[in-house]
Amino acid sequence: MKKIRVLVVDDSALVRSLLAEIINRQPDMECVGSANDPLIAREMIRELSPDVITLDIEMPRMDGIDFLGRLMRLRPMPVLMISTLTERGAEVTMKALELGAVDFVAKPRIGVADGLSELSTQIVEKVRIAAAAHIKRAPGLPTVPATAAGASVAVRAPPAAIGRISTEKLIAIGASTGGTEAIKEILTRLPADSPAIVITQHMPPGFTTSFAARLNSLCQITVQEAVHGERILPGHGYIAPGGKQFRVERSGANYVAVVEDGELVNRHKPSVEVLFKSVASVVGRNAVGVMLTGMGNDGAKAMREMKDAGSYNYVQDETTCVVFGMPREAILHGAADEVLPLTEIAPALIAKLSSASDRYRV
Image (spheres, rainbow, N blue to C red):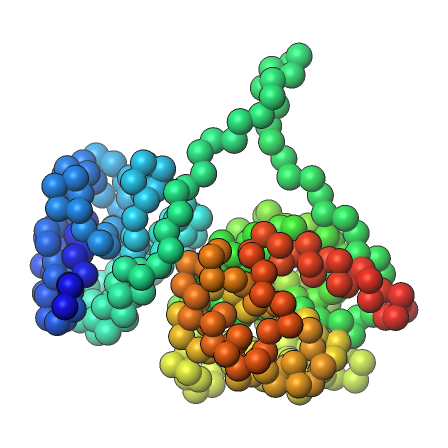
C-alpha cells in the first residue's frame, strides 16, 4: 500500500513532534519530514515531494499565508492548515482557504499537547481527504487593459436583478471540504433581490463568524450567522453557526431560523441533513437546493426528500469539486435535477428564479 507522505511545517518543536507521532501511527501515512519555517520547508518539498503539507500560520521569517500563496502559484499541492482558536486565527484561516488550502484544523491556544491528541482522528481524516483532493493552481494577478489614466482594476459586473418574487422562495446550500470558496463563488454572483438563502458549511465553532463577515463584505446580499428565532428575509444569506444545528421553521407567513445545540448528525454539527430535511418539510416546492463540494454523504438523503417535496436541485460536478463525496452521494440518491460546473450554478439559479418570477410575483 502506497503511504500518504506528509511534511509537517510548524515553528513549535512540540507540535511538530505530536503531529509526526499522530501521522506515523496510521498504517496508510508517514511523516517524511518536518520544518520549523517555510524557507526550510521549501527545500524539503523539492527534496521529498510530499503528498500533503500541514502548515502553521504564525512562523518566523515568512508566515504561513505568504508561503501558501507562493506555493499555490508555483507548485500547487494539498495543504492542511493548522490554525489557532482566536478571532485573528479565524480570519487568517479564511484567507488560507481562499488561497487554496484544502481544509484546516483548529488547535487550542493552551494545552496544545492534549488538544492535538484529542484532535488526532480529525487530523488524520483531513490528511486523507487532502491527499485525494483536486488541487488547482491559484490564479495569478488579473491582467486588464491599460486606460488613459493607467491600469484599471478588474471588477466583476454586478449580477442582473431577478425581479420581485414571492417571499416563499428559498435557496438552501450544503457544503463541506472546499465549500468556503464554492459558496463565495455563488453568493458573490447573486443580486441583492435574491430570495433568502440558508447555508450549512461544515465548520467548527469560532470560524463561521469570520466566514459570514467575509462573505458580507463581498456580496450584494447581506450575509450573517443565523440567529435563533430570527426571521429569514429575502436578500439575506444565513450561515449555520459552527457547533450548532440549524434548521428552518415557519411562523405564520414567515420562515424563522432555529439554531440549537442538537446531537451530531452524520458526525456533523452543523449538518446539511438537518437543514435540508427542514427545508423539505417546511418549504417544499418553493425551495431550490444546491449541493457543493465535500467529503461524505451528509445531506444526500434529505436532498432527495427536498426533490420529492417539489424542490429543484443543483449539484456541483466532479471536475470543479475539491472533493466529490457529497455531490456524488446526492446524485446516487437521485436528488439532482442538474449537475453543473461551479461557475454555472449561480447563472442557472438566476435564470430559474427569473423565469419563475411571473408565477411567484407578489
